[in-house]
Length: 333
Ligand code: DGY
Image (cartoon, rainbow, N blue to C red):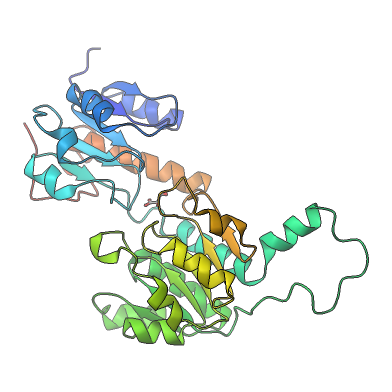
């Protein structure tokens, strides 16, 4: 059957999701994982009605300039700092993302990083695997910092921040948070979380989770000055985006023992990682996998596909993409 819409998928995706898409649209899916240049993106997007886009591909005004056909770009992530949404809106192109389906999985991972960094899971494992555990270990070897009973700080209290906060109750941890706007009282109560100003959060938190969206205002939201306010026994966790933390300043603070440890899933300029961070035993580093459970990555891919199909007028949500970022765009006929 000939299909009226053509769609490009910028990165390899689960076969069942591709098969679902292929029921409705003519599909061109990449089979190799790589970042595309602006020129490649312009070319790929020139002849399609919609695209599913991976985080490493940047879709801005330049990439869609003069494109009269493209109707929707569907991001394969909740964070959409790789999209210039105002430029897409001006061009009349719908933009979507994948919120909510990853909240709990990402919150789990934030805790995994916190616990691993606080209790030296990665560094002690590296030491063991290297064959260093021969005689008796000293009673005061591998001392970490406690997590339970400490004060949890959360910077950025959206849905993932709230999922992190709800878990703190089980660890007996009071929660302080800072967000541009204070949450409704009912949510604060449910999360057992108290709003404080950012400097107070940095001073009082025993451990700090970063869950901010990345944008120009949040660039280096945690830099040398902010790190200087934190406790030397604190663990810093970044599961949000590279660029929110000044990685060079963080490496200095960790190296000088002005911070106990860090758990980092995202980096400035990833996949590059600041060389000083790679050298530090008190930094637990992972390759941007906070949402990477099998169920959640499938759910994200399915939601990205649903958004795209709906924007093109297919499927049960036809005309109403479930997670539209620019509802002011009417969409191209
Ligand atoms: C997101 O969805 O924004 C994550 O960072 C990608 O897994």
